[in-house]
Each structure stands twice: as structure tokens, then as C-alpha cells.
Amino acid sequence: MKKRAITLFINGDEYNITVDADETLTQVIRNQLNLTDLKHCCGRGECGACTVQVEDDRYPTGKKIINSCLSLAAMMDGKRIYTVGGLEKGGTLHPVQEAFVEQGAVQCGFCSGGMIMKTVDILENNAKAGEAEIREGLEGNICRCTGYTKIVEAAKQAGKVMAAGK
Amino acid sequence: MSNSRILPEFELLAPKTMSEAVDMAARYGDRATVLAGGTDVIIMLEKNAVKPEYVIALGEIPDLDYITYSKADGLTIGALATAYQLVQDKKVKKKYPALWQAAASLGSPQIRNAATIVGNILRASPSGDCCCAMLALGGSVVLESTSGRREVSIDDFFIDYGKIERREDEIAVELKLPPVEDASTSAFLRMTRMTFDLSKVSAAVSLQMSGKKCKAVRMAMGAVAPTAIRIKKAETMLEGVTITEKLLSDVAATVSRQVKPIDDVRSTADYRREVSGVLAKRVIKAACNV
Image 1: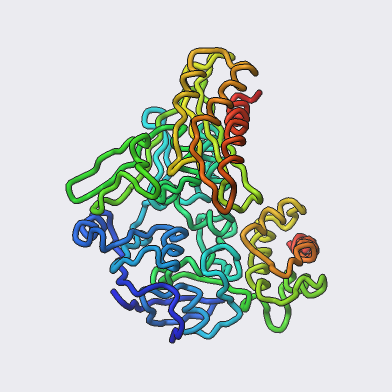
Image 2: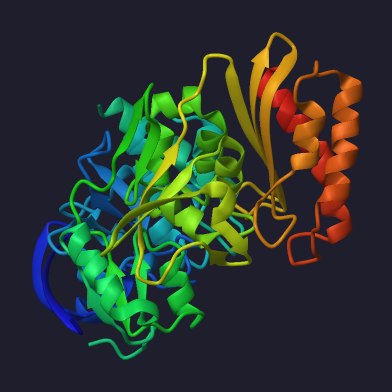
């Protein structure tokens, strides 16, 4: 097939679309669905800017993170996918977003979407993750402004909020 | 619609069964590329390193992500089992620590959630961590075609840089690793500048011990030759004797002489040669817990 009709659920919204066989998930979400909170950066799974969560019942949280640049959209039929744009609920930021703002963990902002989704995933798995676990978890997400210290501080702050909320 | 092409144009084939998949592989041969987790193949497409007319994506074949262990048959890893799944598997961690450590060090969390162990073996990169570990543990790759299945020993699987013992009409369905004895132990170690990097040098060993005496051994090194390689000279030195500091120093010197590394972006040949021996010594110590 050159094209395929698929259904994607992005941040809970259903999209019935036709995609080219050779389009990546990042391309479809950005260019066809116009959800440009998701960034395309290295395109080779090295930088993590395109990180999304995908529902997968084999995982303890029911979700896994992947690089959307390394997924073919045509192979994602029926998948429930979450991007940074879906974290805010009714005008309230997610604790991780809140912490990134408060700690100044954003410089140019290009890595932030992926970095926040990665942090959400780390803390959903373990809100009490310590600094070592956070730093290890953040492997695969690159910030070229090199603001890692504040990102780690933000993750620790958000972890406290998320642990208290449970 | 998309205005910027990222991957070259191809036709996607999404078989629902392995028999459909091997039919496709038979029909299209070298005009097709097989895709599982995507963490190597999509990058190769993006770099135009491969330009297939067809991509055979295995992702919709059900029940191919198994990891099973039995005392009789050993470990079996299905074509769609990911590095994440392997790392979660307590039996693998206990019985095949070399492979477990290799899978745990593969890429980043996102990569481990998508990358398959079978794919890491088929990529046959000299720095492929699972290639090095599996070479030390022994086992085989099970290939399927329209004419049936065949098993290729991992010792015969890596032919040359990026070249493997797989015909174009074959699809790798699983890996088989032999059962491990109670006195068996293994380990994998690698050198990187930062943990997320590809290995500069890697080493893996599996040992069958009787007290301090080594009964049987397989030793492999990665990123020091066009493929991961076994260091048979080192194995001969270790087999049947008691492991001492002196012996390990001699093994280290032999390993450094046996490897044929190159200069590249991650390291120099000289450094790799020097470090190979050190890493070989360390991995034996790690496996023996001394």
C-alpha cells in the first residue's frame, strides 16, 4: 500500500485520516493534524524532542514513551497517543509543566515538549524518583541550551507534587 | 498534507501472519526491507542508506513478542520482543546476565521501548551490544522462508561488516540461547564516553565454573573488528584452569593482540586495543564476582 486509512487518538481526540506509507508519526501529527506542540528535530531517535506516550497494556502505567520520529504513522492504527499539548486540563497546567515554568527549566523551548513528556513518564512510574533515577531516565532527551540542572530540579519539584497527589 | 519528505517513498506491506510475511520476502527479495521496532531501519531510510521499494513491517503479526525460558530448551526470544521486555524479565536477568546487561544499556528508554533484540542481532553492528553478548552466550538465529525454517549458529551468523548469514527471502523469527547450567555465569561490559553513546569497546563472557576452576568459556568483544568477534585464544587460555590474577593479565595481553580495531569518531584503534584487554579482564571478574 502507498496510503493507509487509520484512526489515531491524540490526547483523547479521535482522528480518522489517510496517511502516506512513508510518513512518520511526527510528520502526521504535525503536518496533517497541525498539532505543532510536537517537535521534529533530529529524526534519528537521538534527541528525544519528538517523545510521545503511547498506551500499551504491557507497561505498569499502561503507557510507554517512544520517539515518534522512528514510528511509521501507518503502523499506529488505533493507538492512543499523548503529546505535551494534552497535559493541560481546563486551563490548569500539569505539575510537570508547572515545575518547568517555576524552575526556569525552559530556555529556547525546542526540547521542552519531549523533555516534559519524558519527565511525566518517569514520575508516573515513580513519583519519588531520586536525582540519579531522574537523570538516568532523562537519557535520550537532549537540551542543547544545556539547562539540565533546572530540568532535574523541575522533575524533583513535580515529583513531590505528584507523590502528594496520590 | 506533508510538504517536507523525510523518508524516501516506499510501499508498505503489513502482513498479519509470518507465512504472509515470508511469502512477501520470497516475492520481493532484495527490493524489500524488513521492519520490526524501527530504531535502525527508519534511521537507515532517513539517511538514504537503504532505498527499498517495499517495507515489510512485522508489527501487526500477533504473538511475536514472546520471551520464554525452559530448562530443556533454554531461552527463546521472538522477533518483536523489545529490549524493554527483556530487561523486565527476571529469568533473563538471573540466567543470562550478559544479554540482560547488553539490552539494558541499549540506547535510551524510548529506544528500548521500540528496539527488538532480534533487530539488534540482525543489524550486526560491530558495536551492537546484544551481538557481543549473544556471541559469548552462544545460540542460534531461527530464519524462516517459504521452504521452512533453519537455524544458524550465532558463530556463523556475522560474516562481515553489516553482512549476515540471512538470505533475502528469509525473515528472522526468533533467537535461541542454550539452557544455562547452575554453575554458569556471564557478564557484559562496555566503554562509552557517556552512557547513551554507542560502545567504543564492549566485552562479554560466559563461564562454567567449578569452584575457581573454569570448565568452559566463551568470550566475545565488540567494536574491535568488522563484526563482534569471539576471542578463541583467550578461551583456550582460560579453559580447564584456575582463574588467577596472573592468568587474567595474560588473557588481557592476548585479547589486546587479537583485536583488530579501527580509528573512528568514537575512539582510536590504539585506545581500543589497549582498553580491550582491560575490559576483557574486568568482564571475567564481573562474571565470577571476584
